[in-house]
Image (tube, rainbow, N blue to C red; front, side, top):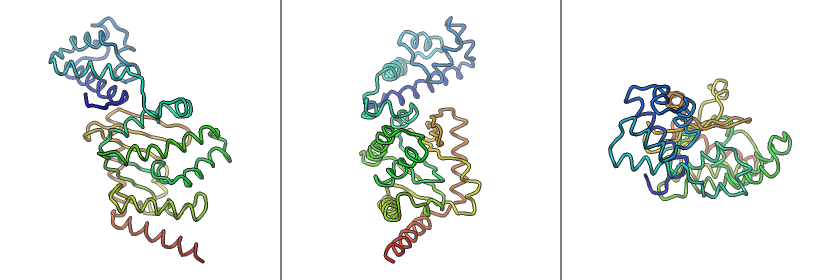
Length: 298
C-alpha cells in the first residue's frame, strides 16, 4: 500500500488484482462463485468495485485463486481494509457530501494521486482551471436560468472547484496536466468581458509556468468534436492503471473498464494529432487576450 492512499484508489487496485488473479487461473466469475459457494452477483460486485470485501472473504478468494505470496496477500488485505475505511477528506464533510455526486467524490480522490491528467473540454474551461468569478457565472447560469442545480449546490460546488485546483496543482508532486479545448472556447464570454479576460489570463499563467500543456482544436473540427462531451483520463502511476471520468449536463460517472479507458485515450490521441501544437495554441490564447483587452479599452 502506498502511504496516503484513499479508499477509492485502494478499492480500484484491489479489484484489478482480483480480476487479474482470476484471469490468470482462466476462471469465469461463475466458476469462482461456485467454488466459494457465493452468489454470482457477489463476485461481480466485488470485481466491479461496487462493494468492499471482508478480510475473511478476501483470504478465501486469494487462496482459491492460488495467490499465496505473503507480501502480496498482506498488501491486498491492507487495500481491502483501506477500501472499507470511511473517507475523511475535506470533500466528505456534511457541507459538501450532500451536494456532490458520488462520481465527483471519487474523482477528487483519484485526482489527489494521479500522475497524469488528460482533460478534454470542448465547450468550457474545466472547472479546476476556472477563476472564482468565471466559475460563479457558469454555476449561476445552471442554478438561476435553468434551475438544474439548487443555490446550495451552486455554493458548495463553487467552493469545491477552488479547493480541487489547490488539491491538484499545489501538491508537492503535481500531475502532468494535458488540456485540450475547442478554439471556440476562447470566444465564449461568461460573466462579461472583464471576467473573460481574467479567466484567459489565468489560463495563460498556467501555460506559461508549465502547470498545464494546452492544445487547441481548430474550428474546422468543431462540429464533430463538440458532440463528444467532456471527459478526463487520469493515470495513476502508469498508462495501464487509469480511470475515466465522463460528464454531461445531466450526469457524471467514473469508469474503470480498460476497454472504455483505452477507447477514450485513442480519441484523445486522434484529437491531439489534429490540434494546433502547444506553441501555436499558446500564441492563439495570447492573441485572444490581446484582442479582448483592445476591445475593453475602446
